[in-house]
Length: 256
Image: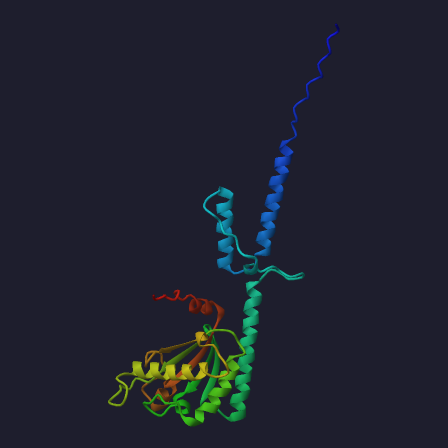
């Protein structure tokens, strides 16, 4: 009986590593596409994505990837976010508010009561004590409400946080409703915040009030003219870098 010859053994496939390599390249490409798509998302969501991907690749824990509504996908034709462009856009917005205020001041002949100045911290609107309050008091004058209403409407055209600062001269408080210039300056700032945040549907979350007493003067306190200049309230439209400090609030505490 003739024996059947055995079929030649198949040679080993030495190119199977290409499949693994191709899979790895595909995964890397997908990873970088996701990073590109998330490049205009805020930093907290990017950090959350990075942590999830880290856990997923290392097989640690139970990673929770971002939900679809948390991702900000670029639209066709969109460019990557440019901090320089954001800064220019903010300058433009503040410049528009400044121009509106200049026009209002000129039209109403308010140059001795309201001044506007662009500073490093943002756009500063200075309101004199004589326009807002009687000496040593924190009740807003009746004829100041219309002027404040115009200013409040302009503030709603820009999304930045707003800090209201009260200032006094260095003359000590004697008698009256307030123990010190600290208390008077803080109460005046608070009165203005309460009024502004209740107008035009503005969110109270955008506002804060602070009192500096006599410790941040604009002029000398040795003359009556200088002291009058120091008695003021400043409305500061904060620049973006200071916006973030206002947003960094502790989480609300829940009580049972």
